[in-house]
Image (cartoon, rainbow, N blue to C red; front, side, top):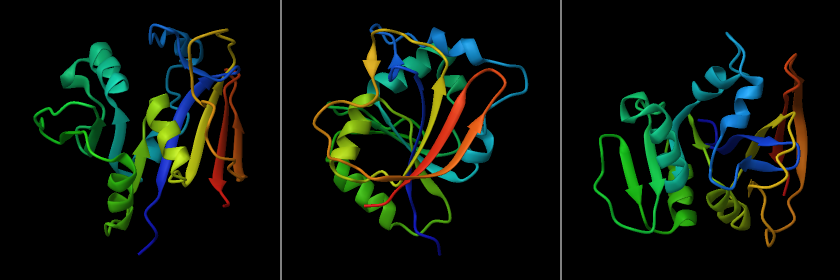
Length: 180
């Protein structure tokens, strides 16, 4: 049985933003191309659990509706500060994030855990040194302001680049593993 990993798979602007100040993601459309998913389907086939922040979850639902939620076939933990009722495979979790991830990693599974954002969740996981891999798509766009992916106050983390892909749209996808 392979070790279960927590993998961050996310897109950001060249200047490090994952969304505009108001949470808008319209700028991601600059690299939308018919038939190109930038490796997402191959990645998602390796996943059986998703961890996402409440704001990111609500943004996705506002864009595609509950019927279009992309993780219906996976257990999805939505991190929130308030108790909510579970909805199908979506579990609203308001406990300790580090404890949850540690427990999920200890479960026997051939598949991994996907951190789908947002920035608060990512930074909390980085502080606890729980992210095993980073797959970051760099969108060829400077936003100038917005929601930064990486916040101050996280520990130094050593990474090893294991793959780098360049696409005709200008998107560059970096795949790192943690080494410490």
